Length: 115
Length: 115
Image (cartoon, rainbow over all chains, first blue to last red; front, side, top):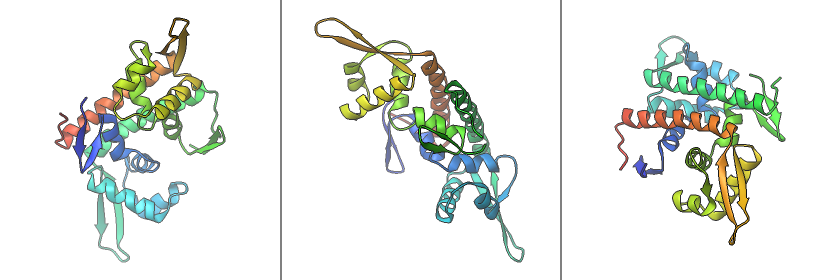
């Protein structure tokens, strides 16, 4: 596949493009949580190990702008903010499921146990 | 999934582990080429855009040590070195195929054409 440019960024193949949208340390863990039900910001912050508020906010903003999740603010006191999966995010979560299974198989292949 | 340590590196989930083995800019492009036939170092260097010799050597060494490819040296004059896929590498290439298809779908979803 030839190179292509998106958002002023040069990509060499479709995997690079996909990883620019859902790669990195935190976006897959976020999508993996949100895929089945809406999550509040504070729930995500408490659930994802070692994530800073700055990083969580950045990831949620990018995932929202990129159309993988939606942000809904409920006018309560105090206001409640929830993040939900979109159709694009659901497709991504199917890929994440495949990668998780593959990673688990690879760990087994290497004789690594998680505990 | 709880955290786990492999090679003195802390991982938080199986995707991180898989990406530590086949992630980054160049390992998937290398595996994707080698999956169907043996490639020589010089062929890979000429085929993969922008890869430095230092980076290509590093990736080939790690993929060999991690059991995704094998290196064979033929005692000719000058010696010929070929890299071939292993069973572990074949499984990885199936995941790469899925990621490539997903990336291409996502590009289409975004209205991005490559050419």
